[in-house]
Length: 380
Image 1 (cartoon, rainbow, N blue to C red):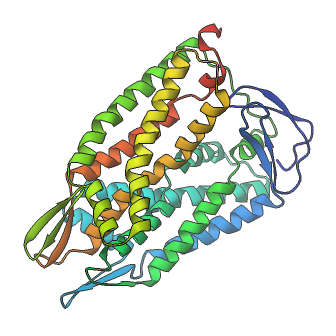
Image 2 (cartoon, helix red, strand yellow):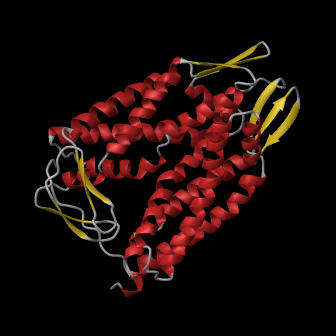
Image 3 (tube, rainbow, N blue to C red):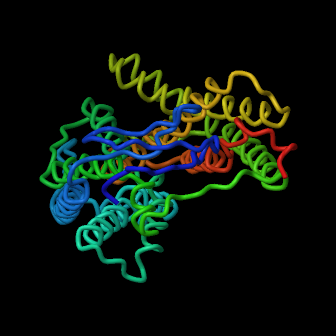
């Protein structure tokens, strides 16, 4: 689907029918009611996506076999590559953290870029094999859970945290992973779901239906349940230690707030602010905003629709970045294992905080933004 002439799309967020004009390169059509991007156009979009996804996959392969990071302290040296880092977590009986890290940073982003590559290749060849619709739905579902760029930021934060303890050397795989993360983020940002969906349906635009009263009620109830769960999990995530540092046999627990304070006292002000925002401000703000949105649609509020949809999109976009602290713990645990001399272990709060992030992400997905624009009790 390369042109938008005489095309009418129904906005999936406010259910407004919009006639789309012919779009030029780098132009996008926006819903006049809720400002949701309906479709965008780029010259040779499929060819560029094919090149970007192929390059990202090559960088992913290069990031696996070589040295990722090397840690030197007290005459000892410990080097890891990405697979070894996951193995270290498993050997230390942190299987759940190993699974979360490997899925979010390597496996799911890898599936996404391979899926985008196959979709782009099929579109260039104008072929629609039987598996393509399922592949499209899989890629669309995995997009929010692809966190390679967040893991990269978490790794950089980890390096800043441990530079005072010892020398850290960056390996070839680290630079390859930077390329993989950058290209994956580029692929995801340029992946136009609507355009691919129209091409797969041979030019037929998607036609979302208004919410029924039952669907609206179920969305509100599920969102409340998830938000209450997130609030309960947030207590141990902040009260319990997120990691333990063992130095010459003496173990020191570190909470999320304690880590922020330590970074601030050591002079790492930008990193302390990043961790504070990502690990404290964002989760709390997301829970508060989603609760406000859910309450407003439950009470049939008709005011401030533009403000509410803007806040919803912000929470949906930034919520996943709270995983930075979890990835910081994963990198430090995998890298710093030197027995009683210096070792780092994850605390109980690591999984609790990870659960908070996942539950709030699911809550944002469960909350149906159409409720902001539709009076659900009046729907047929």
